[in-house]
Image 1 (cartoon, rainbow, N blue to C red):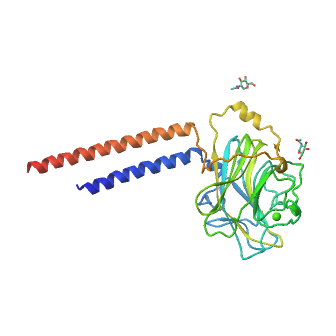
Image 2: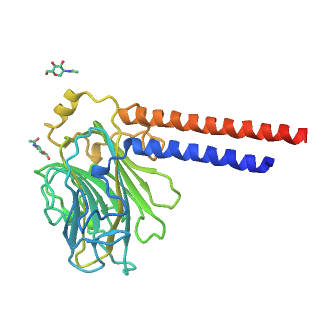
Image 3: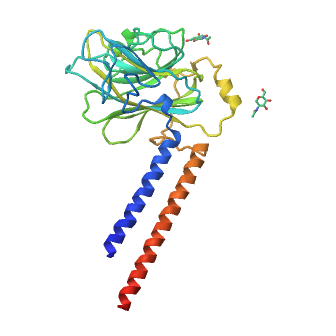
Length: 332
Ligand SMILES: *[C@@H]1O[C@H](CO)[C@@H](O)[C@H](O)[C@H]1NC(C)=O
Ligand SMILES: *[C@@H]1O[C@H](CO)[C@@H](O)[C@H](O)[C@H]1NC(C)=O
Ligand SMILES: [Ca+2]
C-alpha cells in the first residue's frame, strides 16, 4: 500500500467525520413539523403538515403562491401550532416576473393566531393577531416616511390595528430595511429569529451565503401556540412569488415548563415603534444560533463517539495489517 492511498483513506475518514458533525448540528435543532423541504409531497398529493389556499401551486422545485398574473392571492399554512419560545424561521424564496419597473405586490411571512383566511394584506386577512414580516416589492406610498422598495418590515398586531396599504404600513411597522431581493438568479433567504422579547430579521440575498442583519427590535412579546404561514398577492401589478423552503429551528435551551405555559397566554405586543426606536447594536450574523445541550444533542454526541470509535478501530486494523505486510516483505 502506498503512502498516497493511505492519505486518501485518512482524508475520506476525516471528511466523513466532519460531515456527520455538521449534519448532527443541523438535525439537532431543525423541526420537521414546522418545516417544508423538498420533496414537498408525502404519500399522494398532500403535503404533510401544510395546507394551501388560493392560487398556490406545488411543483417539484418550488411552491408558487401567486403566478405572474393580476389579482391573485395565495398562501401556505403550517397546521401544527408552535409551542417553542425561542426559534428561527428561515425562508428560501424567489420573487421574479416579466415586469421590469412595475411589479408587485410582494409577500408576507406570518406567525399568527388564525390561519387560511385570504385577504387584503399580502393575501392574508387584516386585523390579524401575531407577527407579520412583509417583503413589499411595490411602493404604494410617496409621501413622508416613504422608503426605497423592495422593503422588508415587521408588524406586531393584537387584532386591533389595520394594515395601511396606501402607506406601505409605515405607521404600524416596528422596523425595516430596504433590500433588493427581487429577480435574483441565485437563492435568496430571509431569517426571522425570535426569543422573548427580541425579534431579529436577517437577509441573505447577495448570493454570498452570508446573513446580514436587517433589523433587531426589543420589547416584542409573542405567545406560543400560533401558526406559521406565508402568503402573497398581486393586484394591478404582478410577480411570481415562489417559496423554495421553510426551515424552522428550535433554539430552546433548558426550557422551564412554567415559562412555556406562561407564554401561551400573552397578547402580542411591541413596546417600540420605529420613531422611538433605540439604537440597536450590531450582532454578528449567524446561520443558526448555537444550541446548547438538548436530549437530541446528547444522542448526537453518543453517535459521534461511536463513529470515532469505528474510525479508530478500522484505522488500527489497517495499520496493523499494513505493518504485518511490511514485515513480511522484509522477510522474503
Ligand atoms: C391592542 O393594541 C392597541 C394598540 O395597537 C392597544 O391600544 C390595545 O390596548 C391593545 N389591546 C390589548 C387587549 O392589549
Ligand atoms: C411551576 O409552577 C408550579 C405551580 O405554579 C410550582 O409549584 C412549581 O414549583 C413551578 N416550577 C418551577 C420549575 O418553577
Ligand atoms: Ca407596497
